[in-house]
Amino acid sequence: MLGECEIENSCQFCQKMFKSKTHVRTHIEDLHFPMETPCPCCEKIFLSKPKMLRHKSKKHPGYESEFKKKRRKNKKKQGGKKESKKALADAAAATTEAAVVAT
Image (cartoon, rainbow, N blue to C red; front, side, top):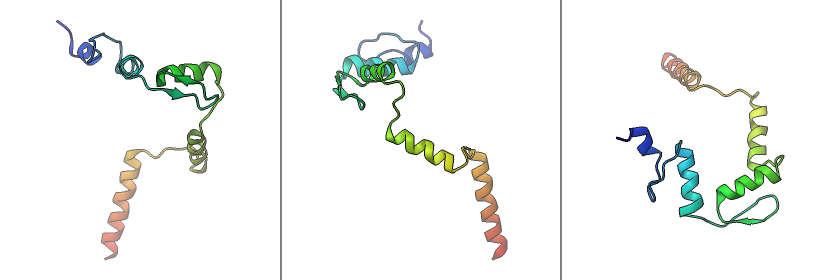
């Protein structure tokens, strides 16, 4: 009998089994729903996004999209630290408490 994990990692279209959900998604995009995707570096057209990403990682290893550049720049402005959810919740609670005490 197949385990629950194995069922989740099978293609819903052809029932092929994979090691991870990521591999299933890549398989589906690549074989069942291919969509022409241009390389953002050289404009070469690929039959699927996974194939374009494979090309880009091999042929343009230093390429960084404008989105990633902006994201990296914003992280540097914030000191490179991500606020944890707990820290944000604590700060919100402290602000709410201060507002209640002030009234």
